[in-house]
Image 1 (cartoon, helix red, strand yellow):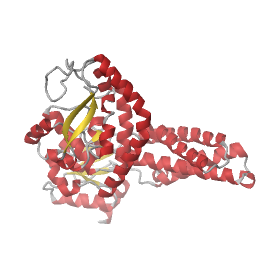
Image 2 (cartoon, rainbow, N blue to C red):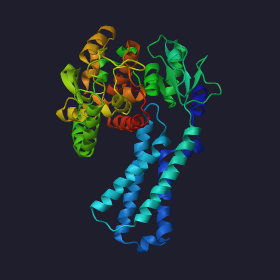
Image 3 (cartoon, rainbow, N blue to C red):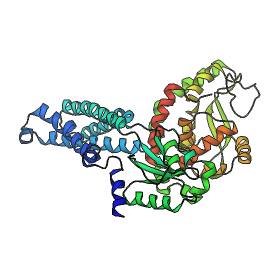
Image 4 (spheres, rainbow, N blue to C red):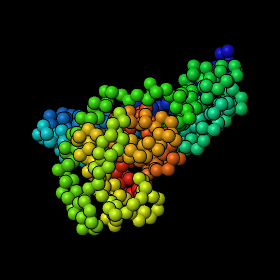
Length: 428
């Protein structure tokens, strides 16, 4: 038995001593502190700075170290979510964390060297960007697939090196994990193989769980495997999220109200009718509410309850611009203050569409277990959806959001929302 176990220990990727050192997060964190905190201090104050630096500079050094650690922690949390590349988020994370450090130093009126903080910021941005980029190139995920059940059909593409196993052994293959349909009727030798993989720290993933991790979707035909209890959002974060929504809206409203006034004026000058559009929508706990938007269509055109693909003749000239960059959604900030909506969550649908989708799509109403949002996971991943097939895919994204309801997923959605605003992705 010992002879059988030994090869598995060597077939887990990055398990050798030098690989564990190279890919160790603790090693990189310690080395990063030396490069981004200590080296700028030596360059600016000299090698004997710890003997001559005043208290204010020591406080600045601690603040910079905290900013760097917070950057690494934030990027690591974001990189665990589907479709993320850590090096893409380095610059915004470094910028935000160092800005917070500067804010704390200014708040407490600490005398510090701005040049030291800025030099540490530049070094951190360059060092982390290069480090995470190289790490991403060297650590492409490699997964083995057990050829039973639904695993082979679910394990395709998604930027992963898939290897379908023919026998319950790896041969010369080294992998990051094994994917199997754990609900399939597996032969005894494959069951023993999976048990040995677990013993030797080679992760074994259920096929649908692996699909969720890689695509950011919960497949509706596999929803029973998650169970409704597993899709209940965290109530503690629900309370925190509501507080954050109110705080952000109160901070943002004074800045955007003048802009909203200009948009309202442009709408009135472009076409007859009111500047604002209201419509009943299905919301939190299946309660109806009135959503506020800037009017983007002519008032005398009749059409469907959803925007038609292509050149919809009902949309005004100003409407095309504000819809492309989601400016028409700004009045929903007042819906957030009222508690009808959140900044982040599944998009609320009209009552007629909700009734229609409920007839065609199982579990559709379950998306109302959380507050609807101005932006959401489905919007940044898929864009606009109205047809049933598109709505099924959108609902799969919504269920993933509900199942993984968390601060870090909301942060990722906010980042991708800004990208959407700049590109106009998914608008109609």
